[in-house]
Image (cartoon, rainbow, N blue to C red; front, side, top):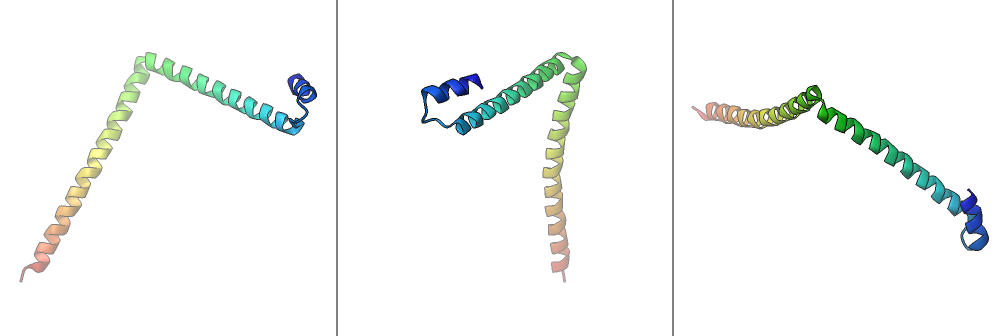
Length: 91
């Protein structure tokens, strides 16, 4: 706040409202930086914990298997559609 007043005295072209808005924006950025630092610290602790690391690996494996399952399901659906078409085309 004091900096805003000093700037206002020395730079009358800068509006007080814009300085307050910039100060509020800077505070929001600082809060976001603190939140991200806490999240990074938590993730770093989790990476050091073997149980958490196993959980992370399992979650990655589950995501991989779900992707493979989706791809196989597409093949199955296509084969079923082809079989149905072939049986419908038979006299």
